[in-house]
Length: 496
Ligand code: ADP
Image 1 (cartoon, rainbow, N blue to C red):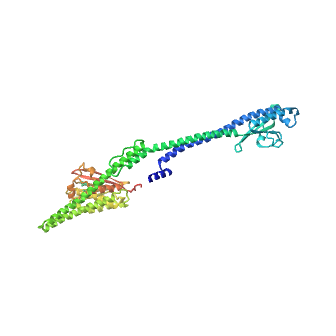
Image 2 (image 1 turned 180 degrees about the vertical axis):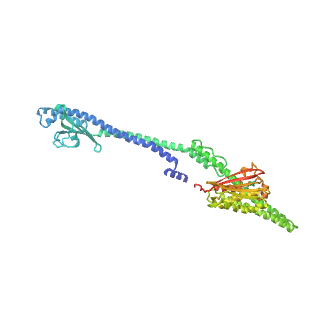
Image 3 (image 1 turned 90 degrees about the horizontal axis):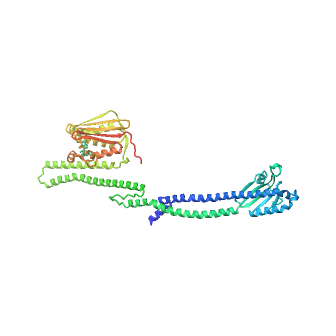
């Protein structure tokens, strides 16, 4: 029920793709329909008025010519008595004309006096209007008053038989006809168009409904398949290939699933490794303390020796926990845990080397530092110290008696490069791709002997990534290794 309500809400708020598609189809289908109806009806109306005006005007011109031929105006003004017998004939023609057109005809004389009005209201009155004046100049006019529903026309009663054929305007026929027939026809047309429009709207709504459902169907299908994926689900979703977009989303989702599964596996492996690594020193301590407890004859020297072993296992456990904590803190590579500050890399390296030379001396390993220039860079000093000390510590640890470690620092205008080279054991070719993995050790027993946790290079790699730098290793087994770290001088924060 709540699904239905939220679905309804998203339709109303136009948040669902389906409602948007529905609306677009509706608008695209209906608006042209309405526009076509409106233009057809108004176009018909103006054309119908034009036709009617020209038809009526033709008829009026014929009648005007009859009026001139019969000297109708002169007869009305009493200046041509001999023609009064044709007055009735002309009156009848004018009356007939006004009946045919359901209108009113007025004959206006030269002094703007209404000589004849088929309505009989204005006879004898004066009628001056712009149109009448214009008509007396010889131009017939027409005017459509839509609001009051009539068309008004003026027709000159021109006598072309006098004045050398140039024509004398004897009077003006002012005709008003009703537009009822046009309006009735336009109404019929409008109603028909409206019925057609309603039918089209109904079809468009049905089409919009079906099409929007059809277009969104692959997305619905995809959503269902994705929501069917339960936590820990190991298989991919079946791709929705109905359209290329959903096929791409299916592919992207399957890739994501693979990455999640890989991440899940590596997390479980990491937890298993951590437990194993933490349990090993514990197990040794347990064995050592049990054997002491079981012996009634152990001497003080034996106690001391066992206790030293236990202490070194405690140290080892401690180192693993310290390294683990350092790694976990760096797991968030967004840079939020970074404390970036301008740091003198030379001084920082010197400090690390000073501490490590004490250990190196015990192994007769010579540690040198070469640098051409003072390097200032925006780094997290604590983390960068971890990086240098892990690399140099490894170079010392995995070295030979009387070996050497060369640390060098250089920079260009973009980044600085720290190189740690040693004359040590080297890394076997097949192990090189794995050395940055957590808990990976080339020679487990040897590494344990010299106190390795397998986390040092994982920490180094994380520090490099956090500073958007790079690390490369070249090594030859038995001859030595060379680690080259490049870090930008200016820290660029990740875009959020
Ligand atoms: P560890 O704490 O065991 O040193 P690291 O992650 O620092 O762990 O190193 C992983 C493995 O890579 C080590 O166990 C070692 O076998 C190898 N390794 C690292 N640095 C060197 C080096 N400079 N020379 C030879 N082997 C190295």
